[in-house]
Amino acid sequence: MVFLVSDEVKPKCGGPRMIVTGYASGMIECRWYDGYGVKREAFREDELMPGEGRRVHDEA
Image 1 (cartoon, one colour):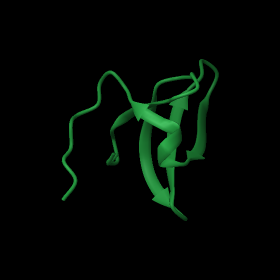
Image 2 (tube, rainbow, N blue to C red):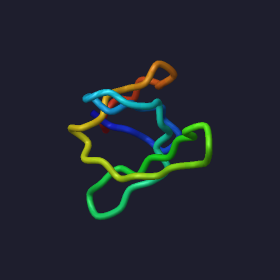
Image 3 (cartoon, helix red, strand yellow):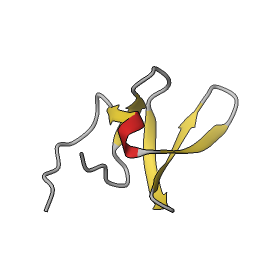
Image 4 (tube, one colour):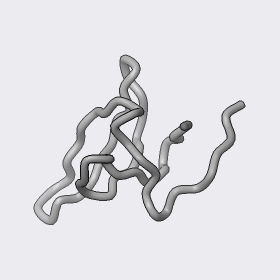
């Protein structure tokens, strides 16, 4: 699956809706607001699934 910067994603194991903000060292960087501040973390692609607001992208 291809996630692009600004796509909405969610962790497969459960968690908040997040926005993809970039890529580094083969990981997908995401950010979200937890009610107190902006959090950020990097995930492997297989740990994420599309969020409700995600656009559909075809792999080139």
